[in-house]
Image 1 (cartoon, rainbow, N blue to C red):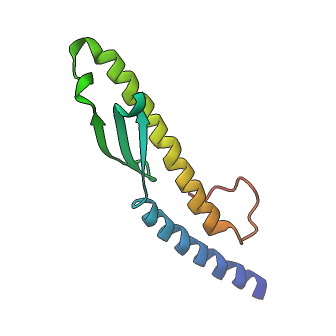
Image 2: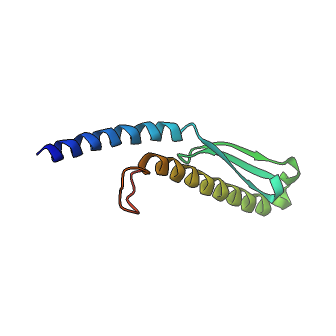
Image 3: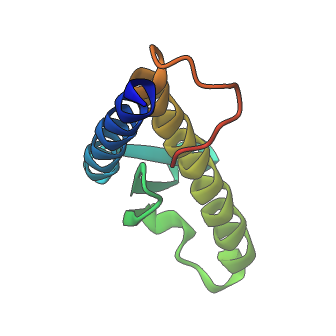
Amino acid sequence: MADFLGMMKQAAQLQSKVQAMQEELGNVEVEGISGGGLVSVRMTAKMQVKAVKIDPSLMKADEREILEDLLVTALNDAQRKAETAMQEKMQTLTGGLGLPPGLGLG
């Protein structure tokens, strides 16, 4: 029974740490860039877009499709970076717990 109580206490501590980490992820920001910096997207590690910057040279009617493509690329780049930041935070949190590989807590 003592082992079970210890496990429950550990689970409660882990839950508390996960909640704190989720709050931290809202403060971690990454930037996705495309077109050599013509388009950039800033987002949190929780995938909330904070800002989009578009170089004025792309603000032409005949450049619309290029701009759309660059925006998608910048968003995808930012998302990859946000996912990496989230995984790094999770690794820090769960590193010493001996959890099975692939166990998602986020």
